[in-house]
Length: 191
Image 1 (tube, rainbow, N blue to C red):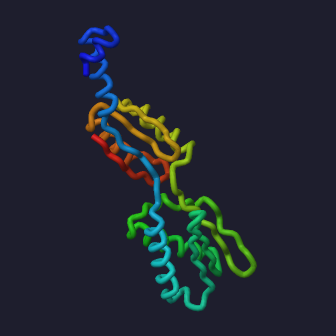
Image 2 (image 1 turned 45 degrees about the vertical axis):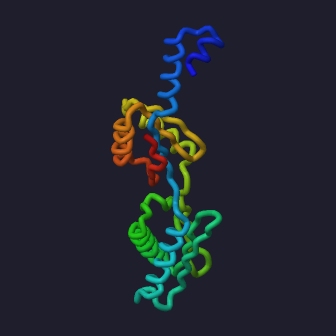
């Protein structure tokens, strides 16, 4: 193949070989993707487990309790008699979700419960995907760490590429100590 380039373009053999080496390095660089995805079936199982547990608890007998998962909008709608019961449901939700393999950071608990008639309601959005501002924070953290990797944002995925797989493993280890407020998973590891 090198001979064809030499004949066609009049380029010296060592120049063609150099270009091929650069091309192979670019294609064969190890990489992985940082994502924040929630498996809908696992989330549904966690919500069903919480519903069963809450209906069987003594302190919730005869109380108005609704735990509903909106699968299209990734939201958990909670209704209970009081703010205290909403907090108890949230505690059970987080603990059961963690047993199902979901991180606590999956739930956005920033919205406050609001009274609606005789009941108290709370919407709990489920974080699915990395928002652009969170992605920029993560890229800044990786670049400030001084590790020899390249980082690219692709929609809700962050691709990390490096010359050596050890550099990627250092990024993974470092990312476990970051406090970015979202659950991160590592997929598509290519070496």
